[in-house]
Length: 112
Length: 110
Image 1: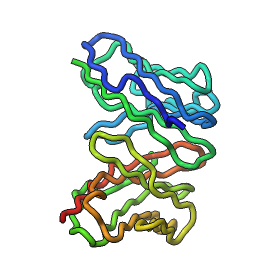
Image 2 (image 1 turned 60 degrees about the vertical axis):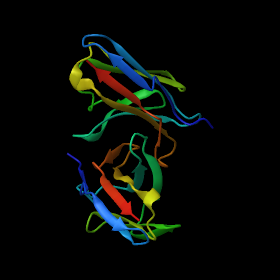
Image 3 (image 1 turned 120 degrees about the horizontal axis):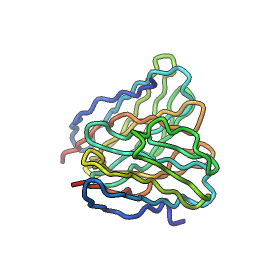
């Protein structure tokens, strides 16, 4: 199994631009999670999906953030417009039947 | 607000010693507990899970859970320099949703 696949690995963008992060979960996992990690706040859950349905988006910082999961093998996290305070590492993780998460390699986002 | 608390460290131990990492959580309804290891610049990786009171051993790692005290710990025996990393405690409630602590940085020196 290739694990959880995220793209891109690094993204540098200018303030105000749209950013789209992508994730392919492990096949057969029915839950998918988007986290953001910073030195100050650690790992913060942004949103999670179960069977492609958003279950809890209470961690999404504001309307500039949106996430979709159109099918069981793909999810996106979009930031529009991006701001410097969005700079962080964004992780996608998937799980099946509550056995703990498997994380992707993360996307390091820098907004200048 | 469900919280998971960890000492940020760094915790410094000599090679061969036992490293003890601690975590407390706020919600008595917590059901599942996990320890993740994160090397600098890498993603978290699951190293232990524990669901019931007591100890669970896996190689050099032992997870300990005390639900009455809302306390979970990780012991690393015969610590090696390669164990130097940040250790994240995570707690799940009645869903798949995990709440993470901010992590404890462990340094094992030769």
